Every structure is written in structure tokens, then in C-alpha cells.
Image 1 (cartoon, rainbow, N blue to C red):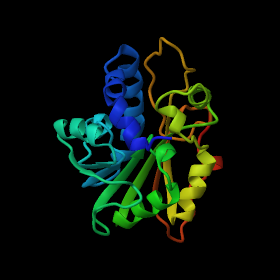
Image 2: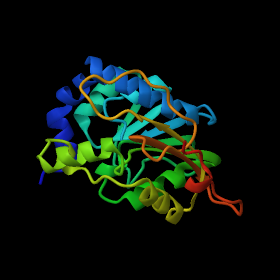
Image 3: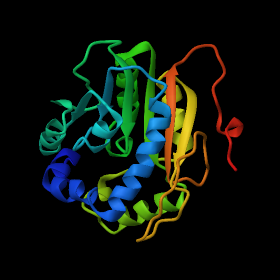
Image 4: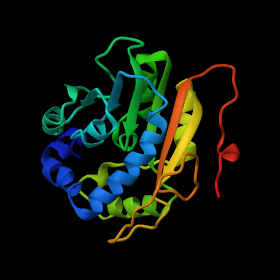
Length: 230
């Protein structure tokens, strides 16, 4: 099986071009809304692990981005992002440098998610935050991408989708404490998606979930049970 970086290098035009379709623009804006609801709490500088072509980074105002795909980074650089070719398992930055680290749609593609989360924690300032955005495997959208994987989609056949619970557990092992959630895509997948506002809390059936965490302390974590789900 080809390395994921090589897969994105080969498919970068199709991947990036999807965001310019009517469906891509609408879904992108919904997901950006969810990320921004958590990002507004954080201070710069921002880093995105798996910045890809820089679509989200530019819209959210992320300063730096790393990615193993050279072709994706060419586009991200054109969008004004300061980029470096690197993997999330080995970040080329000093300790406690960033106010916020973003991992959006990327955790499912990395070889060692635990190590990526540990590296994200390492480069965070003491009061910094980690925002993980994921396709919720247990939602209708998650089932759609699992089907794409089974059918041999050129990109998603390489993905390993996680449940929200699994990601929360991985973040806890990495020494991160959950602070807040946002959710989006309550509508089912279709060829004609409609505009939808994101939610500033956890919604179990949402296709896209964002989790904000900070370095663990003695305070009590925000659990799914205490988050709104109605």
C-alpha cells in the first residue's frame, strides 16, 4: 500500500478541487463554523498538523502548517500559510511554542495517533489548547466514509475512522483534559446538503465533532454525559 503522503501528492488536484463544488463549499463552511466556535477561545500562534492544501488554515487564521505531502504544501503556501514538510509524529518545533494546535480530519490518516497527540501536547504553551476535528464513525457520515473505504476510494481506503469515545481516550492517555466540544452535520449525507449552523456542545449523531483539550490538571473533565445532546 502506498504511503498516505504519496496518495495525497497524486490526488491533490481532485481533493482540493472538491472544495470548489457547490456541495464542497457548503459542507466546508459548516465545518469551519464548528472549528471557529472553539478556536475563538485560543491565542496565536496556531499550528495545523496535516494542513493539507491550507483550505481550513486560511479560513480559520492558522499561522503554521505541517504535512508530509509536498504537493499539498505547495497549495497551502500559496494560501499564505507558513509550511514545513514533516509528520505529526515528529514536529519540527520547540517545546511550548503554540497557543493552539489543530488536527482536523487528519488523525484517521496518521500511523501513530498517540504519538501525534503527544507531540501536539509538547509544542503547546502551558495554557494552550488542542482542537481535534473528526468524522464521527458512529454517525451517518461516518458510515458513508466507511463505505467509501470498503469500495476502495483512492484516499479514504487509507483512513481509519474513530469514534468520539476512542479519540477522547487517546487524548487522555496523551495527558490532555477535555474542555469543550462543538458539533456539526446533523443532516444526513445527500447530494443536496443545506445550510446548517454548528452547535457549541456535543451532539451524538453529528457527522463532524470538534474536541478542545488542554494539558491535564486536577480539575474535572467535561464528559459526554454532561454535554448537551438534544
